[in-house]
Length: 112
Image 1 (tube, rainbow, N blue to C red):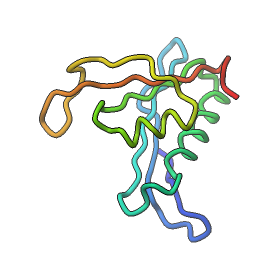
Image 2 (cartoon, one colour; image 1 turned 135 degrees about the vertical axis):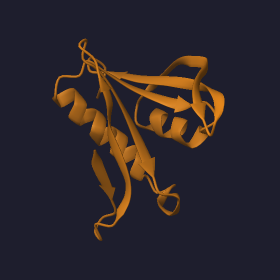
Image 3 (spheres, helix red, strand yellow; image 1 turned 90 degrees about the horizontal axis):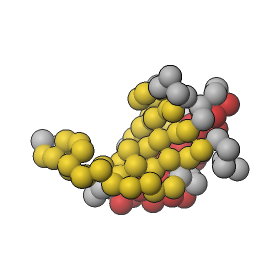
Image 4 (spheres, rainbow, N blue to C red; image 1 turned 90 degrees about the vertical axis):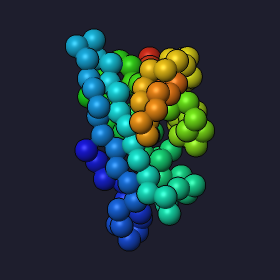
């Protein structure tokens, strides 16, 4: 788990961490930004930095799974350079209800 902090104060604004790392070197991570800090670019910068870190540690593919109604998080994935690969219908549960989940991915061979 990594803290996402505000510069220069060092105040905590969110976190991110690896959720899964397969034997095929596919890594998945998640992130969260506190409501008052949203819209300031923290999530996009954290996703880019986390992805670089994962590729630097041998990941061949990095995946983000995002609840389909979370348009802000989907925009973060796109800004960070992830490709939307599809939507899995009724794949997850959020707030006690079944939901569709979007899959975004970045490949080490394509990462700039």
